[in-house]
Amino acid sequence: MKSRLLLFAGVAVFAFALVLAVKVLPGQAEGVERTPLKIGIVDLGKIVDTYARRVDLEEQLKVLIDPEQKKAKAMQEMIQDTRKAIADKEAQQVDEYDEAYVNLKNVLEMYQIQLKQQMTKLKRMVDVGKARILWQIYQDFDRYCAKYAQINAFDFVMADNRQTKLEESYDNLILKISMQPIYYYHPSMDVTQLLMAYMNEEYAKERGAAPAVNGPTPPADNQPK
Image 1 (cartoon, rainbow, N blue to C red):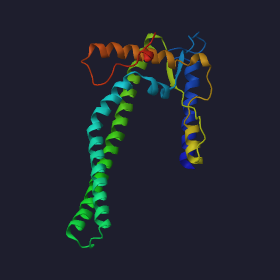
Image 2: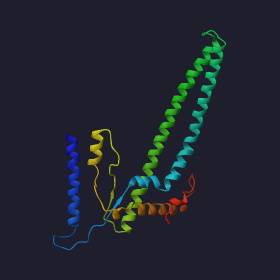
Image 3: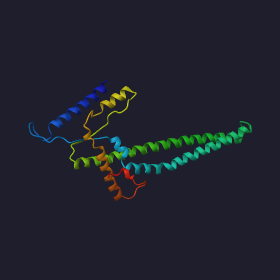
């Protein structure tokens, strides 16, 4: 309860600070005519889903994990072959202490352990790779967003992270709702598509000037018109 109250208090302080910022800009005194703040709203989830560089980054991750996936597949095939050999021995009704039969059982157990280790390694590679892709997209977003805001004279670019689905956990739901900084904005303030087009255009320029990276050229329909 204490942490929840602190969280609500933090949101309230942020909202109050924003009201003050809208009321009086830095360097302006009361009663002096001010220029209205220009605020843009961005859905970062859409940026992550449609950013052209994501295609390149995912292709690089695929190149990295493909050899490990092939190892896992080869191990699965060895396990299947060994199980078949064991089944053949059992069909022959060999003694359970038969040396060849025992060796096959031991080999099967070893292969199963190796496959489990390989799958754990593969899962970690995928998880870390996906996290690094998201981090790179966020770094690009942070850089391009600042440039876009400066070029277009935005005072604030804020996140649209409204809760769009029901959470089964009360604590998770109240946490996400209370951390939402914006509860309403006029649709004209949404600059997601404009910023997305700018990011793809800038990335295309940088990509063209940089050495080629692994992966296909981003799809044409992701490029700004």
